[in-house]
Each structure stands twice: as structure tokens, then as C-alpha cells.
Length: 310
Image (cartoon, rainbow, N blue to C red):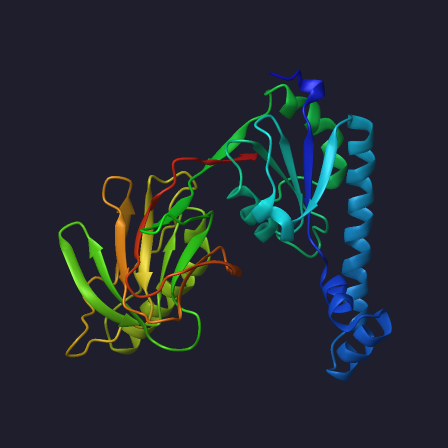
């Protein structure tokens, strides 16, 4: 067991929109020409990039005074091995915190907001300047952390994927998702545009938009007032799923379109999609599992929880 002062800090960063454009178009001038040709505000991209660079300088200066530290871009998270005693710092938007957390196993995660004027930062309670005071407290386990439930999809071929916000199961392209859905003793064949399975944290985002749309459609058919929607707590012991655009036909049903899955009663899906089925997590389409015909996915609460420093 390392002492508090010897604990390594891993800083997770992300490229800005401007850096992504320069990588795509090779030069800053070409990136600027591309944006201005489309009528976009190039100056806003520059301001965002400058704000992130300034915040990164502040964080790096703090870490250099701390001792052991390492920086990793989010694109390398899938292959990065975190140490059991690491302290993890994410500098970016809420999505960076979520995409970092699902690769952790109990390590404390500090979310830093690089530009509060731009990002709401639900998962970014701290500013870069706060890090110097935070690190000694976190290292000595004197700082509180909020537990975050994660979802897990386990395939019958041994593959596994976690999610902090939600899992999407469906077609990779704009076609129908074909699968068999089972929850407890209930099961049916379905055809839809896919389904999402949300954690308590994710119930404030994508799931909320799906439910809101459903309420709006119901009102247009004279179904009365909109029910109150209450998101689940971040450490909720259950997941919520919603089927998107279910299509009833001679070969498909649309009865089990919304519900909850737990560790004791997981959601089980069997793919009937020949070659375009996928499962991706937290809105990252590049972070996915192939879910093609014959594969079975069991979706439940992950054994590990996230720890977001507060």
C-alpha cells in the first residue's frame, strides 16, 4: 500500500473541437477555411481551445508539484491500465467523466470544468484551481465521493461493456433492430429502432428525452395530462429501459416497451440481426460490441460502482 503522497495521479484529457478539425484538415488555415465556408464562428472554436489550454496549464502545474502523475488522452482509455491506488482527474465535459469512469474499478475520480461559462458540468463540480487543495484530501481518503451505479452488457461469447449513463442496443445503420427481449418470465420478438438502458445518472439525459417524446405523443391522442417524470438516484439499484419506435406486426410484438432491470432480474436480449447489430455505451459509437444473430446479451447492474469526488 502506497502512502498518500506517493499515490499516482492520472490526468485524462480530450482534444478540443479545434484540435479535431486541425487533425482532420491538417492545418489551422485549412480548418479555418472549412468553418468559415460553412458560416460557422471560427473565433468561438479558438476561444474554447484557448480556455482549455489555460485550464490544462493550471492542472499540469499542480501535478508537477505533486509528484507521480501521467496524462492520457481519452482515445487511449480502452487500453489503459489504471493502478488500484491511482487518483484519476478528468479535465473536460461531462461526457469525458462518464467515459473515464466506466474503465475504473473504485478509484476516485475528480471532474474539473475547464470553462464553466460554456459547460454546465453536472459531473464537473471543481475548477482546475481547486485541484491543489483537493489532491491531499483525496489521497488521504478524507474527501467524500458519490457512488454511481453502472450498467453492464455481457455477451454469450464472453465480451463485456459497461456504461455510466446508458447502453444502446440496435442497428448500426438506419434499419430495423430485430431481437428477442426477455424480462423475467415475459418475452417477445420485437422490431424497433433499438432500445436504451439507462442508469440512475443516465435517467436525466437520453432516457428523459425518450419519455418526454412519448408523453407528447400520448397528449396528442387525448390521453390526458403528462405524468410527472422523476429521474432515478445516481446509485439506484435498478436500470430503466425504453424501446424506441416499437413496430407491432405478424412477427413482432410491442408490449414490453418500458421497464426496469435489476441484478436479480436482468434484461436478456437475443439478436436476430444478420450483420448490423451493435451495443454501444454512453453515446460513444466507436466504443461498441457487435451484436449479431445468435448472440445473447445480458444487461444488468455492474459489480463495480463509480466514485465521483464531491
